[in-house]
Image (cartoon, rainbow, N blue to C red; front, side):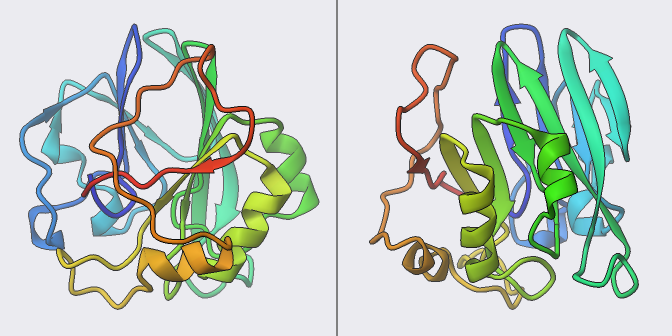
Amino acid sequence: MGLACFRIRGNQAVVITDPFPPDSGYTLGKQTADIVTVSHQHPSHSYVQGVSGARIVKGPGEYEISSVLIIGLTAYHDAVKGQSRGKNTVYLMEIDGVTICHLGDIGHVIDDKLLEEIGKIDILMLPVGGVTSITPAMAAETIRKMEPKIVLPMHYKTPATSRELEPVESFLKEMGQSTIEPKPKLNINKNNLPLTMQVVILSI
């Protein structure tokens, strides 16, 4: 959908992550969901009024809503333990047997403690555009540490936004990959997860 916002549809619930406002350059449209997660209180990540019918999840803790288990873990928006840009919440979500991790606007490569807390995951959503979050190189290092089965890059430069971010191609170069054709959506369940790690770019 744009920036760090994804719409995740499970059998029991719809989750929207980090909804963005109309002035972001992206179009949220009229959205309804069961759950909205907010990684931090920046306007581009917390436009919860743009989603109707949802329970709002903000910050660390354990939540179980509409058969979706969510664990919020403390991380930081910078590399100096929040002294520059404050805290950021990493969310783990268990949806229909698939484990999803949304790193929000994380500003540092995860350490061993956070890596252990997160554990084994299937899908990783992580920022790759740098500037206010991890750089493309840091994103690639994070992926090597976490070993997800699917990587969904987010928070990068596109024609829709005037924000000074790196394009997704910079991240792909760090991953040793060429251009990837964007997909309008990704249909995944626990039975069709890839055997080797794949990077998937979703259409904005």
